[in-house]
Length: 119
Image 1: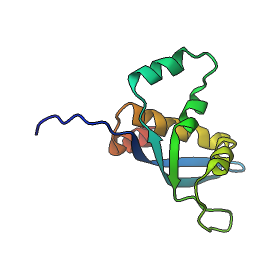
Image 2: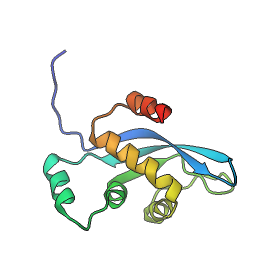
Image 3: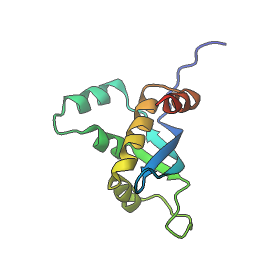
Image 4: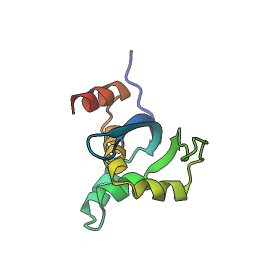
């Protein structure tokens, strides 16, 4: 098959985040996240900006999240308030950053899942 080069602007990846609870207990959360794919020049500009943190870059380029529910289990639409609430969850940030970096690095969803299982 020939190499086909196109300009895809976003990509969806499945993310699993583990929330630490009291003592040795944890809770696993799974969701689909859609991130913008950043061109090389945009990446370089962001990396040169000393005020840019990877967490801010990841959330800034988070376009959509599927499978969000509230405490009662009711579906919640993704919006800026939900994004801010996600950013306020320290246990969630690592998983969002990992997913974002996987998308930027061209890692397949299967490779990403294998990497997460190793850790």
